[in-house]
Image (tube, rainbow, N blue to C red):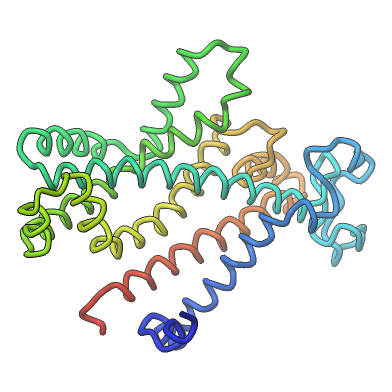
Length: 301
């Protein structure tokens, strides 16, 4: 399998794309740092005993007053910025991945069914998708979050904040999967292998998921990569607006929102360090999505 990958067109294109290689390296380092944050980070931002208020607002190590123990400085609570970013990336990636999985399952399932059955079901799904597309993703997420806050008791808001935020982001991103899966299913449905499976009397679910889905995975993988970056950015936006995660859950958006309060007072690193980290993460994932789009484009082979 390794030899097959080594001689594949995708790896050949990767070796000739410095941007994709750098993006892949950055994404790998960020994901690895987030996964292994409990072992890499010098302090635990969730553990009040692991940091001290006396270490608050320390600048990066290259400025006067900086300490080697905190290379990128500390925030107002005395938390190491590197540790806070690693844990923040962990939470942002977790929410982004869960939202992307839910959006993929929902969108691909509806798109496959709409493209396979057509008719009234297809019309209903596409009209819902059209309404969804008329609203920006952030407004959809705000609407769902507001409904959840109104329906759930106030004492449950803190406990289900991550679940509500994940569901809100997922329901704002499923349309791309549905439209792509529907269009690809329309094309594959009329091919001989699908017609043969239908004539043999195979169940529609088996035809859709056993025969059609593997042949339309290419464009769906590209959308999954791009929507992962969109989900992370949407989580950061909602947390920045104070609607997402609370201040004691240091996601990247929460860290940026906290840093805004200290920008004019001279503690620039509290804002710029997580902001640059978020930009690097989102750009690297988007570059990987562009690379995957080229890999799955048959015109480039």
